[in-house]
View 1 (spheres, rainbow, N blue to C red):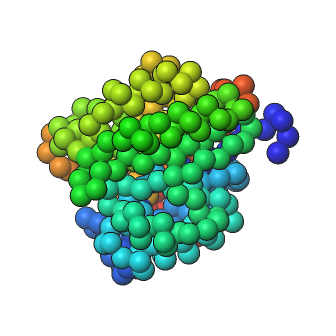
View 2 (cartoon, rainbow, N blue to C red):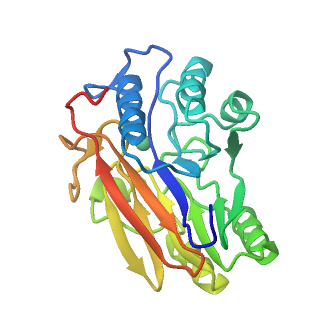
Length: 258
Ligand SMILES: [Fe+2]
């Protein structure tokens, strides 16, 4: 990578894997769907430097599902930065992904950027909250880095989505989290999952971005729980040393790509 090259981050989220490789989430076989997304990424001639997965790796509380995740993502030959979602089991997730290429709520410094994974989960709850301890930890890693630009990676959205049922399981202290981002003076981007749909908006100078799931998507703007027929997706994010960034959402159609 030369100085002018961006850091390229592949954002994947909410694969919801099962021990049973045929397990499905509302009609989508999640293992095959994630495999199809990874095959589409590989075919895309956009070589990433790192992968970020923002939670809900599994759906059925099983070690076998994490083993499937490790096998599929490990095949990319890239570091994989993970944060937990409300469907993950923290202890089991840490235990199942104990060493490189996997990193749990960790940081990566590259090309004048810091990527910082933070935990937004509340034990036993679907909705999230970033604890005071976790916000303080974020402040500390930002204070310690020589990088001038930060991308935070988390599961729950720090903003509302305009969808009554999803906002009821959103983030309790999103405003506080956004304020901490702004106070840092360095957080340019936050990427998240949980909402299984596309989202991209500026909030006070920070771009807040959701990538749709690698499996089933939720219907945007719906008051009641509802899925839609959008295909699985991934996002390409390019981070430049001067703080600029580009990103592109890639929908992976049902047409076989391998
Ligand atoms: Fe999810």
